[in-house]
Length: 136
Ligand code: CMP
Image 1 (cartoon, rainbow, N blue to C red):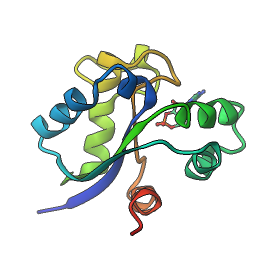
Image 2 (image 1 turned 120 degrees about the horizontal axis):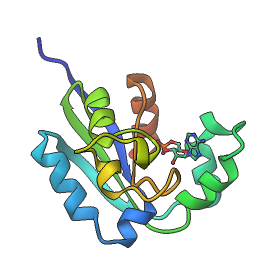
Image 3 (image 1 turned 90 degrees about the vertical axis):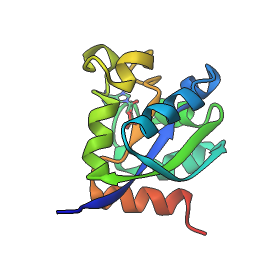
Image 4 (image 1 turned 45 degrees about the vertical axis):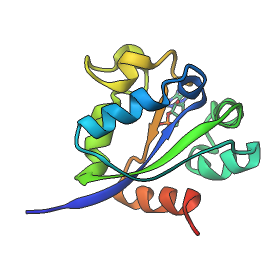
């Protein structure tokens, strides 16, 4: 049964800074994701706070938002069968040292903050996150 889904992916500042944008996009494409839309932007601290609102009570919230707004990022709408789960599997665990071989965070992640990519954690959040960056 077909279950085409969309999810939001972000190539974070550490990866953009290391010129990994094209390499990471090629990984997504080679795994069957269609990049429906993408743009390179820089968010303000308050936009980062809105985006990561679900984490606002966490001790790492301030550092997380400062980091996401620290440099250019690439935001992408990815489409594939079961895209939300497939993207989470391809990204690997949040902590790069815990990420499985063959995952993006294992290959490129530097630390729990500089973990190179973000991906929506549920179908519901994917819709909210896609709207956040691609409302127009
Ligand atoms: P991301 O998938 O973008 O979602 C929230 C981010 O918070 C996460 O990736 C990490 O980069 C960052 N983060 C920092 N500290 C923690 C922590 N202790 N637990 C989970 N995420 C953390």
